[in-house]
Amino acid sequence: MGDMIKMVVVLTVLSAFSGGLLAAIRDNTKEQIEVQQLTFVKGPAIREIFKEAGNDPISDRFKLQDGDQERGFFVGVYDGNPKGVALETYGKGYGGDVGLMVGIDTETDKIIRVSVTTHSETPGLGSKAKEDPAFVQQFQGLSLQDTIAVTKDGGQVNSISGATITSRAVANAAAKASDVYKRLKPEIIENAKSIAK
Amino acid sequence: MAKTLVQEFTKGLWNEIPPFRLVLGLCPVLAVTKSVESGIGMGLATTFVLVCSNILVSLLRKVIPPKVRIACFIIIIATFVTVVELVMQAFAYPLFLTLGIFIPLIVVNCIVLGRSEAFASKNNLVRSTADGLGIGTGFTLSLGALGGVRELLGYGTLLGKDIMPASFEPFTIAIEAPGAFICLGLMLCIMNLIGSK
Image 1 (cartoon, each protein chain N blue to C red):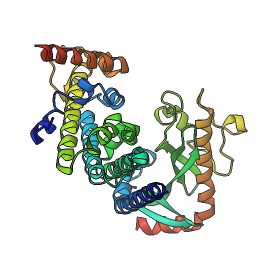
Image 2: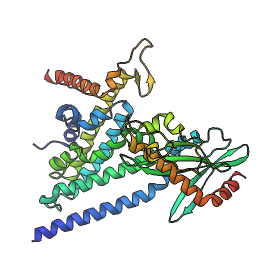
Image 3: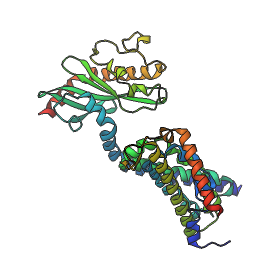
Image 4: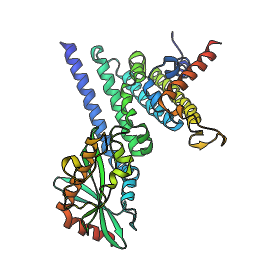
């Protein structure tokens, strides 16, 4: 009996200690990790989306409260006009969440470009969503008035062959971005303007 | 039986050098040795986990009940692996992207658990530290060496620098999965040749 109690106590204390340590380290590295992700993962995607913009969209960013979630937005300035806004959304893929950066033209409500940021899809199949530019190019110029979906679901985006779930995840992420944008549009435009000044 | 501290350290460098003599922990050895840099990065991460878990296991060896010792070891190891993962994300993001899934997989690397079980749970703090350092250094050197051979043959570079003559045609197979086995086999063969004299 005493043996039993000792086992439980040791395991509990050890787990609690481990949990506490990890929580502390996570708290302390969180900001630094965000910076690193901005530079190495989101950065290239954002630059790709705002290729023609004249500013540095990574430093021109703001955050907005969306329900109980905080979302980051990046601003692309075209000839002094801050009409490009990019945000990241996630869709459920085959191997976990697929992150998608979606750039939106606030004047025409059309998608400028999209770019996959993070994913853990099957190499050679789902990973084409990130590697094959032909797939994400299909999103270019899509209007947010229409529903964004893959052709199988009655939309306008052709799936990557062999990777329907990944394709659907990307389309869902784009649709989510569209929802968020429509919901927060007035605030987004206001914030984008104040940043560009 | 009683080895000196120096012997505890140096055994990891030759007599018990993990991938070549014990032929243990081959999963990361084969997977991440595409270049010197990723090999050494993986080696250092494993060394850190080895030393820390050896220290803690050795300190707690009289407290941990024998019946749940493996569970305790795994908690300790998993904690340090997560620490490495977070710190690497915060300060060496590109390396984190290269090593990817193999960082969390250090948890199940049999070398780490093996040293806890076979050595640290039976020896005092100083000896366990020396053991962890020795095995870790041996592991890092092996990964670096194997990475060097594969990078040299596969890309004609070393640490990213071109060192082979321009006429050198890279053996692409060296950086593919079968190349890992072939290079490892050849290195084992050379080590056995030297060792048998």
